[in-house]
Image (cartoon, rainbow, N blue to C red; front, top):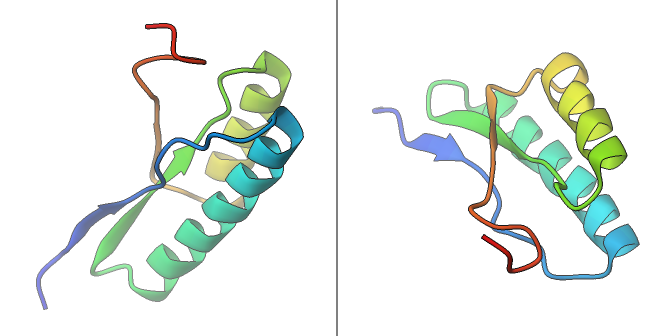
Length: 81
């Protein structure tokens, strides 16, 4: 079976707390799918750039704890390029 490619989420348009919780859950799901099918997927984490503290915490968790392959950064934050 050939490799399918990266697995990542789209931007999340919710309030900050919901966005943070949803982002963590999404990263957990993506990491799990990629671990179960390593020959098919790379896992790319979504990082909440609207809050630097949350961004750094989720970056560390995604790479160190979840062992994700990389991150996805959007082209704008809160609709500001």
